[in-house]
Length: 121
Image 1 (cartoon, rainbow, N blue to C red):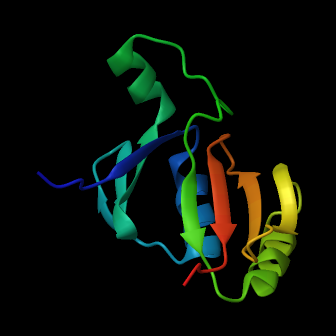
Image 2 (cartoon, rainbow, N blue to C red; image 1 turned 90 degrees about the horizontal axis):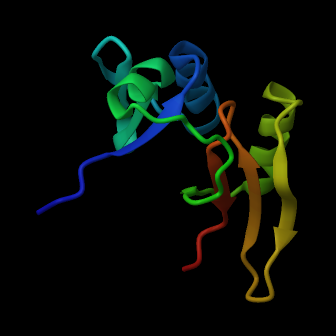
Image 3 (cartoon, rainbow, N blue to C red; image 1 turned 180 degrees about the vertical axis):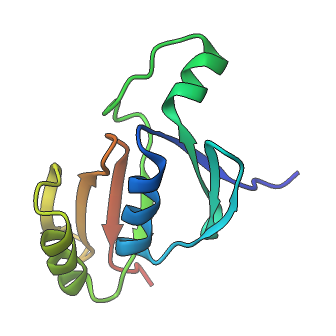
């Protein structure tokens, strides 16, 4: 068995596609009309379709999952984040852990938690 994708629910799939392209360089591989597969295995699912499929409410900013990215030049990444998305909601701004790793945590446009950290190796 092999994990193939991670799916996140989004309110505006086109805005989210742009967000993940702008910040992480992810590109669209397949658009299935409300279900979009991006490079690196990230899937964007339209909220209205997901809600109808599950027959349950969507809980944004639930803090139960996190998308994790690594970036060597994290200061440059944070500058780009602040320039392109100045209203982004942070969990923590750029900080350093006791073991030396620098990280920033924030929510995407739909409340999905993202962490960007410097590589640990």
